[in-house]
Length: 499
Ligand code: KIV
Ligand code: ZN
Image (cartoon, rainbow, N blue to C red; front, side, top):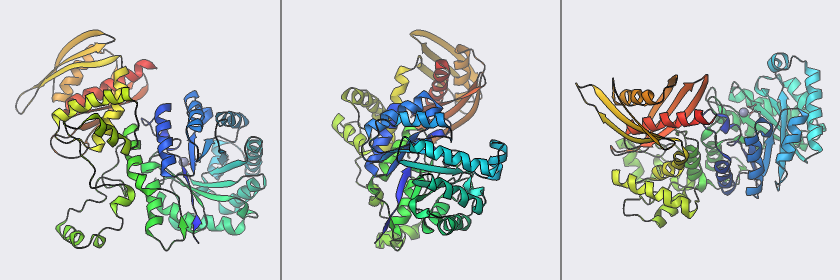
């Protein structure tokens, strides 16, 4: 008999902490519903005390999903716990996730405290959370760098206080896999009452070891994994859900199972990447564009003779469908609606109409419209509510000539035009834009990426613009990369206007 491994998804909490990846409540609900379809056991929906937006998202997600437990994060502070409990009032199954730093570094520098006092605060927080909910998870922040003996004392105390799950985060992604596995084993062997709680892993990827560490945790007794879609998360990210799930599915000799419906992995991955404007690296395990692409002749030959020669996973197992319909200018609304649905986006008829108009324009410029393209179009309607809009853009450029751009902007209904030259078409266009928007703005980061392939592909642009001491993130997409760049810059400007 296999043991059940609980999958705790923190895409909407730890994943969403990535600068520039913030989602609004409606988008979070969309992701949460997909996570429910995927079969995750617990959804960490936010850190309610951190902002009214986070609070509201936890409330709305609690109403929108049925099966997964909804979890809210807190510090070991009564006010945080009060607010978290309030945000969970509509959840059918609820959990409060409270905790405190336990490494000597955290105790000394973050809390100016000592080990005994930290245990007292941990116990008090768990007992306080227990007044509101039965299911209380405790996290020992920076457990990866916490001495095992002391960590065992903390874990024992919080289990006695009623913690149902004990989370052992490698907050800084520092541990080696053997070391992390040994930590979990130590707790299993040295904590009185350890079987009264589930041990959870929570690994960060700073040294590229998050998945390996999580697996070692599981092999040594952890029965919950904290993961995110596409491995997104602070800095180098968290353990990715798809990697840990597919490792366990592929290695059938490991008697541990999740209830993840792996055929939904690809659509959730695309949806999260699209909504968060966070491209998936092409060589990313499981969900990267190249994860199943065999380009060397020897591999192609082997795969044609027997796919198992070079493929350990059938792409269909993660929902990669070779026969997926490619849409063209002749595809109707129904086909578009169906592809959006397959990719996890269910829209109203009114929104579908808007997306369809954009789809027709794109289909005019590009022969085949892929799933990535339509997800980009589905996310692009935020631009409709912008007060600064691109009216027109004309660029002359080429080899041996100076680039010149003319730009027209519509600012709350008023039209403005300017022209500028530059060292290239994008430089010229942005200089012209800056002649209209006369603010002290600095472009801090700028990336252009093709969505799929072909010279008629859509270019996605991500930008960071600094203004008035803050950095703003913007996104643009078009078959014309100069237009995409200007749109990304305008996206940033619209964001600093609303603050
Ligand atoms: O990485 C970490 O330690 C965390 C905790 C707040 C659980 O995200
Ligand atoms: Zn974390």
